Each structure stands twice: as structure tokens, then as C-alpha cells.
Image 1: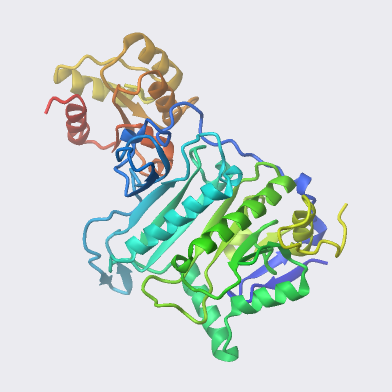
Image 2: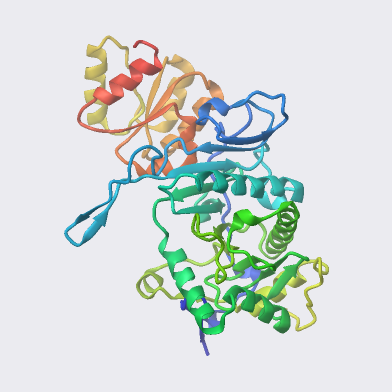
Length: 346
Length: 113
């Protein structure tokens, strides 16, 4: 029988459709992105991008030229524009404001062919550090309330260029998803005086059914009510609501757990398209006891159609406990040995 | 100029020829690419939504051949801007009945202003 499950933070329901249960090899994967040819993100083509706002390069190399490891540039054709006032106004019962925001692209490395999953942990550290530095910088602009960081990998997940990149959008409003998450977390805190995400981490470690891998600072789980097969959350074990509170050791821990999580995912479903999204607290919120920053990695393996649009429910053919087992068994023991003796999958 | 709509080609040709430009046109991406190789134009105006090769694919091939030739993407739609492949272009102009913005962009890219 199918099973309905409720996400404890958002209150969002999903359907685990066991009749439609699938193995990793049953999911069709279409990775191709772009058309080949000239790449505006490659070294040597810096003149095709706007002037960089951040780059990690050898100190002697000039700005906006080759020699960089990570480069952040404003979006050449941004969805929101940086200059101007918000000019908020009411039109009858409707609200409107100018489309002000910062839309930036993080070019994650100079090599066109290398995917983020295949980056060394040291290279991933630079990408995560770039997110942190850009959030800190954008926080100074009082017009912005939230910085959303996300990555689209593979055409099916919305990537339009093969060259590995992610995006960052500073918004003058809080996204609905974050408002709901904050509300859910606040409500749990009011009742129990504990962070719901800290509770989730404790329970997942204790139950050990959905832990994919962990190290001393981070844990990756398949959430109890995942929207898609192999959805994973990467959470810091130490409570922190702001992503930019990461120290250097955290950045290394994060890079290592991301490497392991994505490698495990790729072992299960090679070249799977996915999105990852950073969930962090609103800018200038000063550290929240009830919220806990994390990444959500969402493989693009199912389609969203009328039922999902209409109900807000997602239908997932793979229970997260099975997904976690596949991920754990995808290769050797995990860094801190998430136990994988709970069952076997055929 | 590469655009699959003949009516647009006619209007653009008339307007740009009146301004003293020589206009070479192609009705699809494949033929546009061939003409780009043969005719070596000073500038390209390229539609995005075309049957066969789309404009972004054509753009990335043209820039492989000669990145120095300015290419203006010209589309009736803003939403193609989400495709980072469009960054290989030198400008993106939304089609409108008034060609002034397009003409200004052409002059700027050809350094005539």
C-alpha cells in the first residue's frame, strides 16, 4: 500500500508509492547539457562575462584574465537588477516592487569537462568559501533580505552550460519556502525549546535508517519525507543558523561530505542530473536558536505534473530507507561508518 | 542576419540597407553557419528560436570559428536569457517594432558611434 509521509518542518506531504518501487538502474538519466562549442565560462574568454566580483587566483595574475580557480561574476543577463530603489507600493490589494536583486554566477573551476562531483575536496572548499564571502558581502546591502545559492547540474535539472557553475541570487524578499521552513522550525522550538533540525540529526543517528554518511562535522541523510528518489540533506552537526558562520575546518568537512555524498549518488545513478540548494537564515537575523542551515540535494528523476502542482504533494517511488541503503552500499564503508548492515538490496 | 521569419528578414534588410549596410541573410542556423564561414561578416544578428539548430547552438559554433565577430542575439522572448549559452553573445536585444535599439547596438559594436 502507498504511504503518506509528512515533512516535520514544512508540514508538506509526500506519497511513497511502493507499487511503483524502482531500483537505481530503472531511472532514465539524460545528462546532456548545451551544445558544445565556444564556452563563455572557460579561461581565456573572460571578456564575455561581466567583470568579476570575486576570484581566487595566483596573486600575480591580473583581474578578469585567466589563472583563476573560482570566479564569481554578475549574471550578464540578470533576472533582477542591482541598481535602483525597491519602490514598494500597493495596487489595490496587490503588492508590487521593482525587480531589484543581485544575480551572480559562480564559475566553479577552470576545467570545462570536470563536474562538481569530480572536483577534489580542496577545490570544493574554494567554491563553498566563495558562497560564504559573497553572502557576507551582499548582507551589507540593506535592500536584500535573503541570498539563495543553488546549482543546476545536467540539462534536465535546468543547467544550460556544461561548464560547472552555480548561481547566487540576493533577494529583497524572503522566498516562500524559507518562510515556511522558518515558521515550522519556530513552532517546534516554541513547543520543545529545541531546534527541529538538531532533533532530526539526533534521531537519524540513533535510528540509523536514513544516514548516508557522516564525518565529525557533517551528516548526510535521506530525509523522512523526500520529494524525489535519492534526495539528500547535508547538515552541520553543530547548531548554526547562518551558513557564513562556517570556519575553515567546517569548509573542509563540508567539502568532504559533499564529495562522498555525490560520489555515492553517482555510483547509484551515473551522471544523474540534480539541483542543490542552500537553506540558510535571512540576512542580518543575528543567529537563530530555532533554525539550522543545510543543503538539500535533489536528483531530477521524477517529473512534476498536474497532481504535484495542484496538491503540493510529491510522489516518490523509492522509500528513503531504501535509497539510503543503496547509497551506503554503493561503495565501501563511509568516513565515519554509517552502518550498512541493516538490510540488503537486490 | 539569421532568422527563420521571412517577413522580419524583409523589414530588417530594408532598414539596414537604407542605412548603408550590406545585408547577407540565412533562414536557418545551418545555412547561417555556412554563410558565416564563407562571407566573413563584420557582425551577426541572430534569432534564437529556429527549427533545426537553435540560435544559441549556432552562436557557440560561430564563436568557435571567430570569437572576434560581434553577434547580437535577437529574440522576441526575454526568457532565453536564462540560458548561460547566451553569454557567448555580445548583446541580447528583444525584438520590437522599433529597430532603434537594435540599430544603436549595431553601431556601438561596429564602433561607429
